[in-house]
Image 1 (cartoon, rainbow, N blue to C red):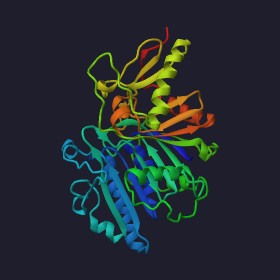
Image 2 (cartoon, one colour):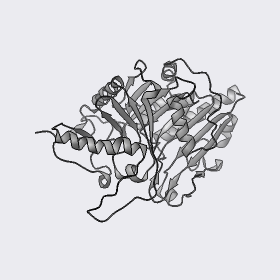
Image 3 (cartoon, helix red, strand yellow):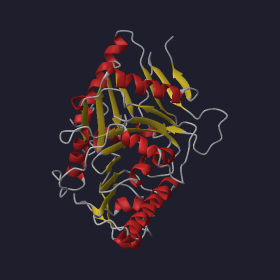
Image 4 (spheres, helix red, strand yellow):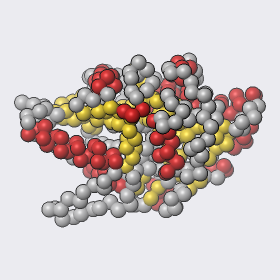
Amino acid sequence: METFTLGTGASIYTQKLLPAISQAQHEIILVTCFWAPSKTLTALSSALERLARQRAAQQPAQPLRVRICFSSRSILQKLSHTSSADGYVYPPSSWSSKLGLPVREVLAAGNMQLEVKSLFFLPFSVMHPKFLIVDRQRAFVPSCNVSWEAWLEGCLEISRRMSRDDPVDGLLEFYHTVWDKELDLGAPQPPIPEHGSGRTSAANDRLEETIKSPADSTASLVDIDVPATAVEWLPGWHHRNPSFCFLPWRFPLAPDTPLNTTILRLLLSAVEKALARGVDVTIVTSRRMMLLEQIVTAGVLRIFYFRSRAGLTSDEEPVHSHLKLSIFDGQHTVLGSGNMDRASWFTSQELGVLVRGAEFATTIKKTVDEALDGRLDPVFTPS
């Protein structure tokens, strides 16, 4: 593990993901859910164009393979989307006009081979995971989309430690299964960089378009021992059947995906048992966001609404929390894309990452607690 970063989508992209993209030599794999005109998209396009022009000046013999994947761009795009599992591949003529990316000629001059694909399955099945893999050596798991929302977001940065059976390989396998079945998982790997070197070099390669947020915070994880066996990817496969039931006495069970089995079933059971034992439970959610999908539970839980910090007028001060984080017993930490709502449980594709370790959990919790300071409104607190 390298870092855990908090901020908004624009600040995380410009301070963490885009510097890593700017250093790519062999392959860039960027997967997100929502794609929209925004400061993030403008910065991403500029970073790709700058990289292409640098490569054009250097004339590298080896091409740079770039894959961009997303699910949602507009209502019309989703209504007319193909139901094929192969998705829709955007023609080069649409890269700039429809997607806000550099034109084909600029990328080709830098020997960059771009493919842009979307996947969506009616009626509600979006591909909700977000991640970036650079040169199969570094991976980032952000909660943010390529879009305009100024929400509190988080991003876990991982570097390869082993040539095979590394957590980065697990993420590559997920990408291969969903987005690119022709991906050669056995391709020769570049040399593994010295632990921590990727983090330092990325920090030294700041972009002109760096965007900062009052919520920005980064915790170093370099000195925390997290063996590969302590990291587990938790996919939540999409389901086209939303399993709606209009009989009030019947409650359809959510599908048995690895993510649901790890989080949903255990969470509900653990919360019920904890409350029965008199344990206080704290929940932080967003006010007036996805109201139809949120279940608000009263009682002796501690429930807070996230809000902007008073007195801050920055455009990048978060107005909602989009961070997905669960910590159990101070030892088990789950980050990723899954929300605690019906869409994530039943229809959307999701991806979580479970990290086992007390020191890791403590560091993540401390970083988040500091970011939440002054940004919480109590709803229910123990009497």
